[in-house]
Length: 309
Image (cartoon, rainbow, N blue to C red; front, side):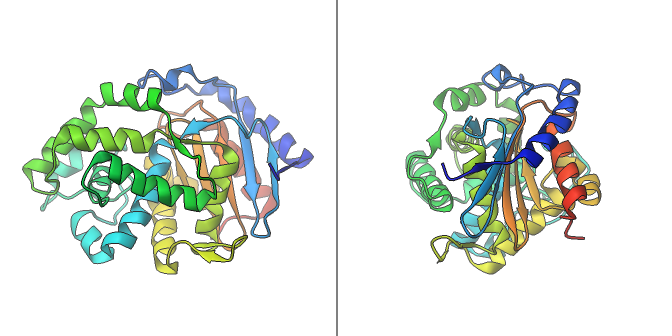
């Protein structure tokens, strides 16, 4: 793996790791509850192909909500922005990521944005294909292209664990079906969505995806455009406004890096025009973000002036 150890980065990881004891792993999904809350690792991938790292960056974890940005990019390429945003909004929310409250008061009842669960379910509903397998393969092919690794797949144990405990997401789909925003079988969509969330990789892979977003959709190493500039721009904007759940405003002020987190403890960052970041720290704060991961990004942003604002 072409990733060099960095002493400076290691010091920042050790400093940020002190926060981990204040967090808690996402044990409401039983398979995620097995993670070591003291883990913290980071990879930073640069356009020229070099990479620096600290911690056990080869340890795999599932994308969870980080997959929402990637599925959004795919669906925007497949369907176009007009089609997608007719069905899901563009506004941030102060509510938790799994809340149903805003759907009940919105007219029409479309989700506020693609980064909350209701919006992500609508986006996943739009992935093209006739079966769960075809649609998952469509998403996996795109992710493998972003990472440059044909072996990326999903964790069956985590997917099954999520499928068995996804009752709140089922409720969201039923509500959206009632309002004709979704028109497929509930269990079919839950099957696809839980497999999407269980797509698995390491910090190095995640940093590579972050880099493609940072470089406006281009894989610089291969000199290959993977997504249009405008789609990369839309996704990075959502990462800023909604990427860290209902802590996104505070994160924008303290860190200022387009980022997306997941309840496995992953965070993907895209520093515009500069580099991609992949972090794994499974101890979460009360809003579902990696507590040590956020601290690490705060330290990086402050020390190296990385905020885009």
